[in-house]
Image 1 (cartoon, rainbow, N blue to C red):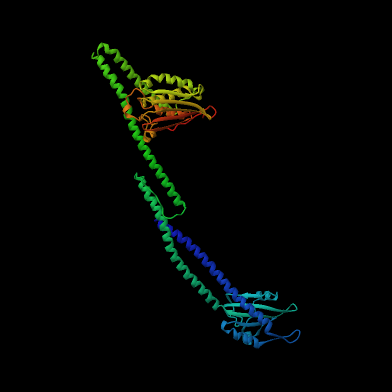
Image 2: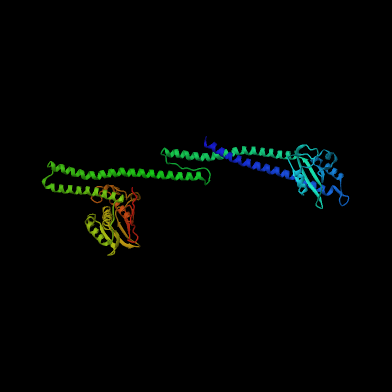
Length: 489
């Protein structure tokens, strides 16, 4: 069975049960009210008869005012109300024609009357006038004098009018019930259709995602904050996450292909050079005076391959948290001075000027060898992309951290280049792939991972044609984390 009909049946079932309960309670309440009103009227009649239909003769004798009773019955003839009077011996005294045919009041009811309690009887009862069994409403009220029962006044009427009134009420309720059910059918259909249409939108969106199409914008009708709306919101968030994941997977796959191509290129160049020189040596194609230079070139290319492999291994160890840091507190200024000394010749070749802006003592808490590796790679990168410019190295102690900055006046980078600068084998200037500085494209990727592994932070700001600034920091011993888990990419 389709969900539409299931929902309709559920709504109809709830509405039908509710209407049935309300109708039954209303009919019962109306019936009880009609019966109670009828008995109230009869009780009022007997009270009037008790006070007006008897005339006192002496202290112990009363005379029935027959004329008043006859006039009262005539007035109430349209309501089919009649009266009967019993003496203290449970014998009918009025009217004569009824008293001859009437039967005594039932013993149980007579016992209640002798106690001074009024008695009301309804539904199938004995007609006090002729003793026949028919639907009657009867009300008996006793009259006492000095604690002694004198007589019982009774008023009775057939229940046809009461049943007719109740029947009309029941018919009206039945008509209302039928009309309500018809209205409920239409209402439940549209409500169920509305809910099912929302579910169908979810279903179509799910099928669309299942086919690999994540361009889904799920908007449900209405502003209800219900479970289906919540499900739609969660589903949309899931689709957005899947879409973002797909984009990231595609980007990573492109980077993987680029990585394989770059790795192959980086390794092929020195291998081709070495192979060519070996063939030249094997076939004596290289003059004797050039052999020493060829051997030196092969040694350089071999060292380049070793550096490339070592940097790949180093990067993977850092990325997979397999590297252990041995952090100590030392003076960073001494290492900066040593790095500047080592790179002075390279800076001179590029006509660059190296400047240090730091105090004589700048304490830093880090792994000494890794700190040197970070600083060396960043300064070397600045030299690589700066020609006829200035490179400024800044170091200072901040609040619970040591702050460093390396600024250059080189070629700078575009925003897209800055965004990808930490990717391995990414080079902001592809034309420099074969330079002797930073040939692998792994230097900055390693720098980024090492700083993160220390619990520090590294940022880069750059503008094309104006230069680049690397800003990084290391937390002090008090705030440095014990261990850092790096996200694998």
